[in-house]
Image 1 (cartoon, helix red, strand yellow):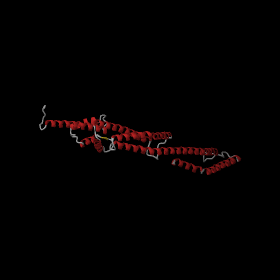
Image 2 (cartoon, one colour):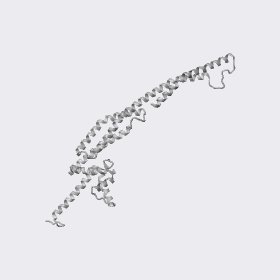
Image 3 (tube, one colour):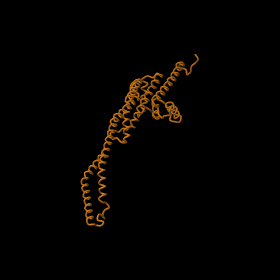
Image 4 (spheres, one colour):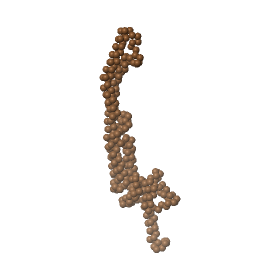
Length: 306
């Protein structure tokens, strides 16, 4: 709007000079007529020719007529551009007002879902219920995204490429929306898997919290997943002995193949939980067998058929 207003101001200043310019035009044509009259009256050969210019009264009058026609046309062009710019400005403000509400809403939802994904807020059933609530709220909020998409389409058709009233673009909002949906669905799937693991292996709520606390401790960036190095550190902290040699590397690769079957390069909590409970169960079973042999053997290092 500042640019078009500058053009309008310049045009108005130009129009203010037209009165003086018209007086000069009349003076020039008057002089030309006087010269024509004298040359005709006294039969002066070449009397109307002017060695100092190629212009004559007819050419000047023709150009002046063009100017007088162009001025109102320029007025119309500028007015049309003002209306276009005003319409663009309304579209910018309309999009920005909505985007400045939708953007923070999406960010807040993402943070809230991530907090649930950390697994330290209530039971798994509570987490699952809340995730489904967020899933439903996203469905109910979808008309706001649809409205933004419609306004964005109008903005594209108007060839508007910048919007100083918001930091959000339609592309960033779409990415955020998809990230929110993906996060909700992934967390729902992970919590459901955790419930299955818990129920099938008889894990208590306290044990589950201990596993989650260990996982979260090494998830420094709060991404909901562990890198191989973070996972290795977590295993060591839980008492696993991973040797720092080729055999240790081979053992760790075997473990990674179990917890990261799709070779994503990361370990998610449901896979971590499944592995830890499997390992715990195996160790418990072995320890129970050893304890049973100790009871049967008494003080002897062996048992007999009796």
